Length: 314
Image (spheres, rainbow, N blue to C red):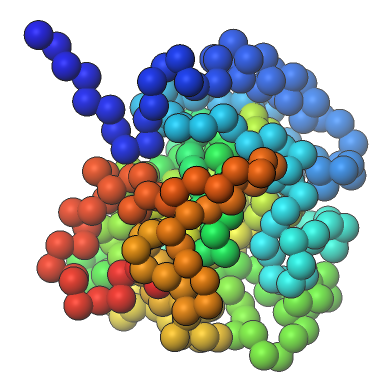
């Protein structure tokens, strides 16, 4: 007898958003991608992506709840470069994302720079449905477009000495008012171990809702690591370095007692100022129980064997 074992984030098919509804929405969004750059959702396409959007959905990644409507997720964003409030528009629209070049350096065979358009052409795009859990105890579910971080790692050709991947966002005080605040350790820096970076769930996002990222989402290229709190998913990346020493990340530099390097989701480990046991689903009045590793434990728990003495959940 065949028994299907559901993964941690899956639910029975009858509870899922009908595929026809979601695909129809994607088609409408794709046709709208060429509209004017400024709208209620922020800037339009960051570059001429041609037929790249909407990308084919990878059916291996499903959700346990409906996709969060864009009208909610596009207007509720953490982007401290522009504002400490959730309303980062219109400030975020001041960032020019074309052209956009990423520097690859550190312990690699040969450092290089590459434009986002060229990176997409080399690697290709797919769509994945991921849950996103903020450390502030709210969550959303979104369709990211992008590619596995492991493919970028392979392109970079790191040497055996590389133990971590360090990622940094742009630095431009002229357009990012938050970067004029001296209390913050700019530029925004994040990092993963090589094992985490090569895990299939680690994703580089260049689009969302079937079109290129709007600025408030971290255009034109960002990280999405769904088993970690959202602050790990660095936005508007300009530099990726392969390094031997563990990077000191942005929030560690600001408040190490509250925010650590690992930042894995765990409902049993509270933030010093609030519980992580449940989360508010963005765009609804629902609070739902939080799952260990945000429901992705089957795919990532093995990464942390032997690291029990580390602060894995802050």
